[in-house]
Image (cartoon, rainbow, N blue to C red):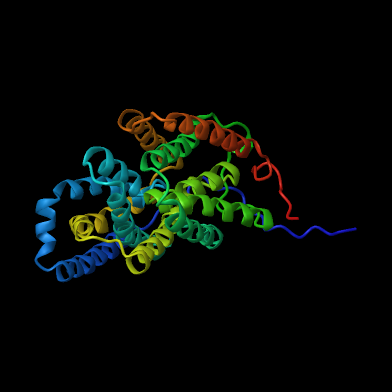
Length: 349
């Protein structure tokens, strides 16, 4: 008779992880910002301050973008890409390239801050979802970006995140609503789920500059029932891995960075190196329901901006509706799965 492999079960679910030490966090983030500012001045030379003066709207956009990127699973590009393409009338290609470059700095700073402060994360998810994410991003960049209209991509992303918001708004019932401090079981099925989620999220990231974090957040929170306070910093590190790989791919292989995008980047660097770690620190001190509320509000803004500012003709609206219905079904299916509920003990196979 086959013997079940002993499970890697989590301890009893915790309500809130211990927040980061405030004084230590401020000292570390201040030193990190000073180092980046020095590099920004030396690298930009005479262009650094001039870029802010000319592209101050980019700097202003990234005040909110960096806070969102460091403190939520949305990613800074979720603010930058729609603002650039819908309000500032910057091309989708330039907005995407800017997102990769600036998230490499901002989410990199937030990731260092998270690791230094020992904010709890799910490290195993970084390996499997990160592997899928980098692969999906490379495939997307080389094969999908040249063929897919930017409006279609924007609507697809909006539909995916809106489906998550609708499921998060549903009331939770029973003891299964309690959240795990890390993944309650980690076997072949869980690794495959993270790999596929990473692959899909990486493909989205290659198209618009973010998506890896929100797709993996969806799977870890809705299916695996991991606490949002653990998942959020995990997805910040995960998005940094994918976006840094995308930045290097475009810089050294595709070679499509223009002086215009570099000026946008120079205008935003001194802002994001402060905002992203600050967002991570604030998130570590919030209750999980507050994090959910902020995430849902951001998704609602994303939905409304797409509804009013994106051309939904020529079948784009139908694709968005079909995607929304499909992902609502996927999220509801994950939500109703009891395999990872805290009131039962899942077994590895």
